[in-house]
Length: 402
Image 1 (spheres, rainbow, N blue to C red):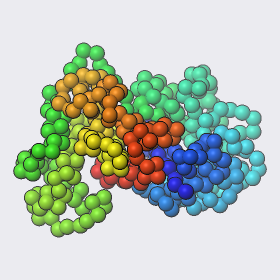
Image 2: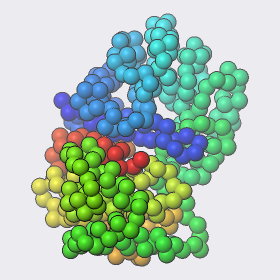
Image 3: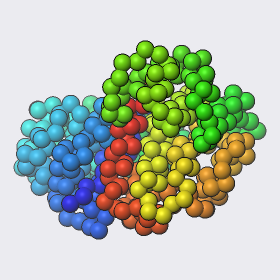
Image 4: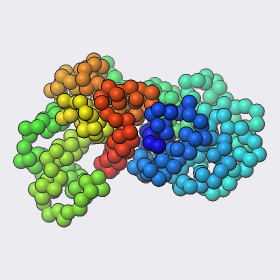
């Protein structure tokens, strides 16, 4: 049985990733939540631990994993490392004596416990006393309801997590209310400032990204770029010996490093570094998400049996969040850099041959499994190849962004 696992970032107050919640589906033909909860949770647990490997998806960050009533009462949670696993207790779990006892053992063993979609109700106090984190749906509760809970002395030792934060305005509001953690895709949306222009330095970087992504670029040009940038040189040498390249070599010069890494891989790496330099004062996760999308879209192109635009898909994914990176409308950004019509049509107009690849990447990232199946069919990619493509993209991004 294939296991489909995606991740959603959880940020702290400084917009640094604290953890990832794992979103899962045991197959694209029998998807959660219509699948039995215990069965689905068991699939993701065994899949993430044994088949996929949690570290490939989450790197060194903590993983929030949903646990059902029955599985909480079993020994399964103890299969995961307490230092990196947050036991997320679903909202429909009944706090009966067996659950309180099981959660007490987990807490004593060093696991952090999080209550999902929390709203005060009778009988919950015993679980609240064991919890480290309480998650609240920011859009489903009023300001008064939220503040009443946060200010209640009963919750004095608990940290609060705001779910479904989709805009910077919501992030700022939740921050002021006293939330410690934030979950949602606000980080990938632009904070558009009226009347401002894209800085010339950022445009130069983006034009360089496009230039080095063209098939006719030669190694000598790229060598000059690398040699004149200490940061690029250092990252190149680190990347040559990374696990994702699956090779080790004694490197004595930039030229040798370029020979080892190869033109295609070098162009990818330089593109990502230049993009990250344009993303000053932005969450690291924004660049990491761009890395994942770039690699995932590229992988989809290789797996597709019908695409004619393989060479454009890496840049498509790389620029998926360029509006958020530059805090400008996507249409304005695309007007100023010479990307292909396929890329521009997908990013600006939401149309064209490249769009289904981008949509598939976005839906997989969000755990929107219904539409994952739809777009996988549109781009002629076998569904059972998706977990490996995504896991490899996450691992690659984790190794690059440091």
